[in-house]
Image 1 (cartoon, rainbow, N blue to C red):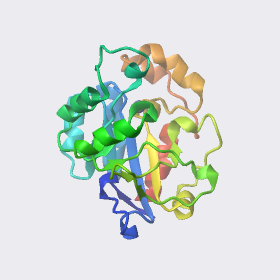
Image 2 (tube, rainbow, N blue to C red):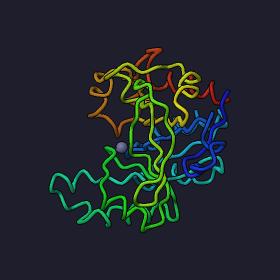
Image 3 (spheres, protein in one colour):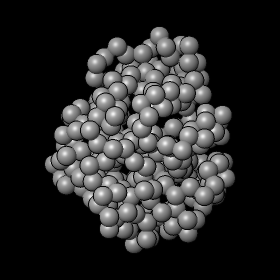
Image 4 (cartoon, rainbow, N blue to C red):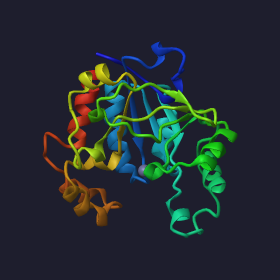
Length: 240
Ligand SMILES: [Zn+2]
């Protein structure tokens, strides 16, 4: 069994804050309240700590905020800027500020589509964000992972496993083995994939037209023992 922790608790110089620990993280990705509640129910029942990267206001986000075991971070979306759509935000600073209006004073960040750059990192640091988890070092790379400090001054805490990577390349489901092997073990889940128990692109593809219809999504759930919900439940067994 390994203890669970939140991302902003990582102190680079103190390995006891990040070795043999499970960092459970969720990219909320504008999930419907019913979809998000489903994941919150599972994680709360397990009584573990977790970091939730927020994309929007919601009563379910308020519920997450009220649980002292949970940390809220931001999940800014820079994709419209990259494709020339300035209607969501005219500048990366505006996108970050809009997210911080929802989660004032938070310390952790992962961008949607893990977008990062020097100016974005400086904008994060200038606004008091201290921990960034935009990097991915897959557990399958066989590397020992530890946090480091970026030139912006932020702590970089890469993730080593993601539910959405499981259906594009081999990924272990032996989570205690991953924790023992990699050192810093950050896991990335998405409530929509937990709800659907996604195990292959076709599951999510069929659901995409119906993301605002949770009743419809129930019919599209995968029964697979290798899907995202099954993986989350295995990881929670390792953390409890
Ligand atoms: Zn995202």
